[in-house]
Image: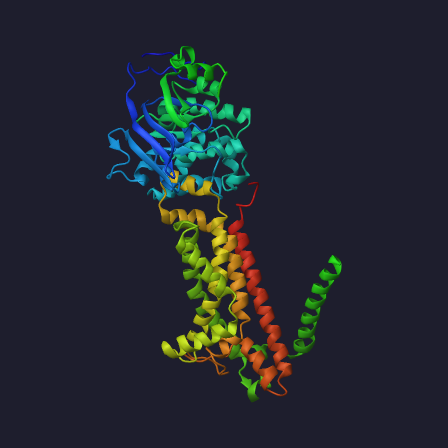
Length: 289
Length: 269
């Protein structure tokens, strides 16, 4: 399944696509329940390494619940239980040797509403590094600069790194949050409607950033570190045009029998060009959902 | 109507402060603040009382701040809000907060002085005050912790931060305003407390030599001078002025510390 990128954006680099994308995340019969009521049921989905996968669908179809289960943020929700299995690489994330802290170190998350800590811009970035054992201040500062450059924020904030992160605009805050997630060098970045709280221009900037991050090309080239695994992005969005612009692959979620379910997944072109399911077809044409 | 209420409040405040200043200001001097009292307090200074008050407050805070913070964290972060444990603890605290201080005094006398064998001492006084301060402090600190948005907890979790770092670096700074308010209310209540201390730290007006000595707090001194010592009014006024001033200073200091913690965090939210 070779494919051309559907998004003719300037930032997309002509990286040679692997012949068959390797599956990084595989969910099996994954269901998420809140207080015993299922929100999304039996999701079997494969997410390819180094690509952008969009999850689309109407409200209440369990997109966000599915996403949150991928780095076990669902553990934090009282009354939430997850059944089924998720494998990321060789790890079964719900099984014993895997603990949420190790998992989340590898699988970062960006939320709908930007949530920088109420501290300085710099500290937002250096504190997580310190937590994860980067002892030298100079190393932390260098890493902070590198990720700020990656997200295109460096020029905007380099003179006020000690100002409160809350003094930034919404779009800048969201980019800071992305930088904060990237500084831990995750393998996967989950994004839960990262643009829906932003204005169109700010969301355009985030979209460009997603495409730039795809494959992890920028983090490695700028920070000059050794070659790393490419970044895999999973983006929940209810903005179809956005999914079409940024995603290599797309999964459609729908509400069936009152419960969320994944009804179809595949390369974005195919999902938008010739969807298999009737609901997807109508949703994509804007007739339902 | 509304205006008259406001004027009344201000008038009462001005009257009290004016009365204290008029009666006590002329007697204030460096020697008054440092010297021991003579003739049952009619003459001499209040040096030992200031030291005793500071020691009692120190014991009270050293005990109540760690226990209070830990309880507030437990209530806001670790137990389900509607669970029986949380409800029971909260209910107990609300009742404790309303118990008259004389009851705390008698309890302290029985428990700390007699059962634990601490006798009339600064230990007993400070620990009794801690019992009084804890309910106020815990509730206020808990509100502080609850006021930190869940988004911050999610951010910390998604960055794989440990529970301890999340508490220490993210939640505590966010909860600081509530913690400071609780501290100010608690210290205010403790510093002004009289009834609970008469029965626990006692009213020996010598300079305390250790925490196991009895020590007379400023508030007890004022009470004793004005009620039991004929001719002690002048020094009672001066002591009251000192106590009011000390509480004011503690309030301001707490406000400044709070402002320092808040710096860089209160901008558009």
